[in-house]
Amino acid sequence: MKTLVLRHAAALALLVGTSTPASAGSPRAAIQVEPGQVDVNLFFNGATVKVSGTVPGGRQVVVVCRGKGQKLELKKKGKVWGVLWMNTSELSYDDLPALYLASSSAPLTKLASPETLRRLGVGYNALAARATPGAPRDNFSELTKLKHEEGMFAQREGVVKLRPGPGGALQVEAECRIPARAPIGTYRAEIFGFKDGEGELLASGSFGLKKVGLARFITSLAETRGLLYGIFAVGVAIVMGLLTGLVFGLKGKAH
Amino acid sequence: MHFSVYLPIAKNAVNLFALVGLGGLVGFLSGLFGVGGGFLLTPILIMIGIPPTVAAASDSAQIVAASTSGTYAHARAGNVDFKMGILLLLGGVGGGTLGVWVIKLLRQLGEANFLITVTYVVMLGGIGTYMFFESLGGLKGKRPPARDEPSVKRPSIYARIVSGLPFKTKFPRSKVTLSLLMPLILGTLVGVLAAIMGVGGGFIMVPVMVYLLRMPMHVVVGTSLFQILFTCINVTLLQSYVNHTVDIVLALLLLVGSVIGVQLGAKAGKRLKADQLKILMAIIVLIVAGKMLLGLLLQPDILVSYKGGH
Image (cartoon, rainbow over all chains, first blue to last red; front, side, top):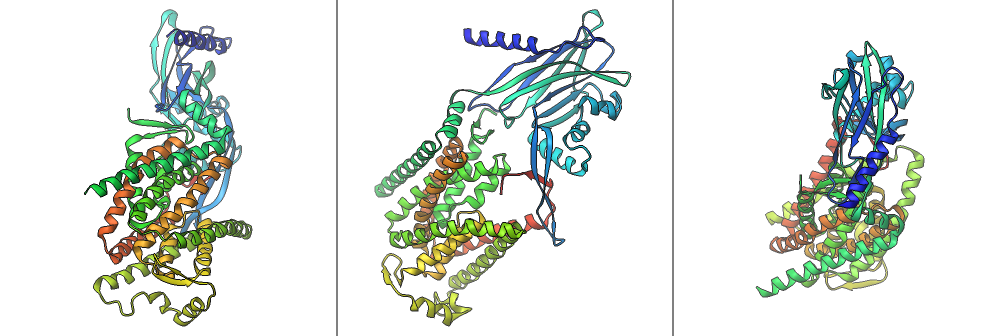
């Protein structure tokens, strides 16, 4: 229990530490991310990360949880000889987050112009523009379909709760649903504020996914002692196979 | 939701019972037909969110367990021809290595994927159709000169080559007398094909043993499992050592189901006649071929997929 409390406190301290102070026009913006660290063990099945905060009043808000940008390579199916669908080409995106979950308090198109959204990196269109400047968009919509199915991309409008707080400020509450397949690593949580078609990043924090316990042990064994791990896997499989054979063999004889 | 398990190497969570059930089903098919079942299991695992490389590698660990259990069951019934199995295995290892080189060559020529997929579908369709009608004829009792069908197309050539080969030896379990070279050569051919198609090869090996080596169907199932056991031990070790893609949690859940399924399959197989067994296998081969063909003909929902799979 003690360690748990301590770790919690440490995570909070970290969050406060990494929170970017708001820009000049919005002195009271703050963000809180709970939990700061998500433990990934054998019963991990995704997690809900709560992002809450305070922003100056009179704004609409977008909350984004995102992974680090990385290169992504894809295969694309096309028609061969006009009839057969096969992988015919390859695509690559230079800078795309593995996870991108955006929630907003109002439809994105009503918050700001496409240019503003793109500059801030808010919404799929902004992602597409950043990932491959000048590339055709049809492939990107196929990619978002793939990512949607996995739960790694989401863009949900009207789901961020805004409540009036002390001193004319707004209390922001949002959730990021992290799917089980999200890679281990550090993620950013950001609160963007929009007013009169203008937008800005008000506050940002971070959270992490970390393998612990048996899941961590198995992974490190597989990666550092591959042969031993393989021999163990084969040994377990053979023993299990023989045992079942024996049990069924005895049963067969008994009849 | 409480019954999900996180797979540390696959890096995703899946339903515990779904995996055990899936293992049981595939194990049953293994015990019945002597195939590894990777053709069925790997695509399903990919569908439920396991990366393709991890799915194939972990599946091979599962097959080690299932084929151990299955070989044991069939050996007790006297249905494993170890001599034939070892010769096929030796050929298969050589053929597998050769196959990897052939793929390299094909890739350099371009359109390799297309060639491979089309060949696979045509071959499966051909083998399935042939098996289906041959065993249907057998079931109806209208089989004129039994076991001579493969030579229908080129009777004299195949028969002459087979009888002309040196190193003739008896295979008492299979009740055939053949040249030692036959299983070696056929094992090599299946190995090449298996490496090119990227599957274990049970689907090609079983018909080869039935029609080209003229082995009795029940001995074919046991001997095929014996052979698959060693192929998959090799694959599991290599994948663990080179690619680190074997997820032991995934393999364990699958094999808990499959070691039991394979025993039940072997039991069910004993109650079926050889022709009934063959016709069921033919139907499954045709379903797999049909599914692949549909996959090629229908527009997929999503046109892109991650690189690094098949």
